[in-house]
Length: 113
Image (tube, rainbow, N blue to C red; front, side, top):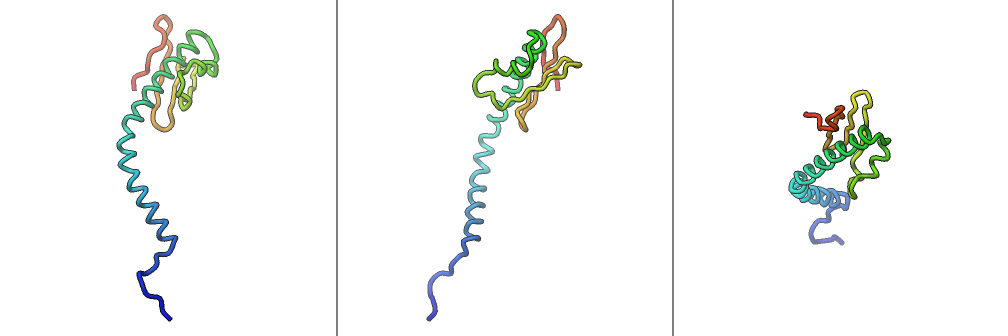
């Protein structure tokens, strides 16, 4: 006795096609949202660098305490200080990075890229 009807597609192949379809559908959505998210990450990194520099070099507080001054939602911003250069770099990995440098009598300003 033979079975008639449409051929059966193996589950593994069906799962691969489904994953490919989801990926193809997700790419336009990612392209649509990438630019605004990138801009927000850049703004967050700039804010973090300026705030971290002022907090660390003007107020004299340790860098880990400076994170307490961040606004809600800035948990992805990471700070690092270079005490020789008197600068603080804020990063939202892998999207954005900004550096602010302290200058005596002028405070903290962004380092041009």
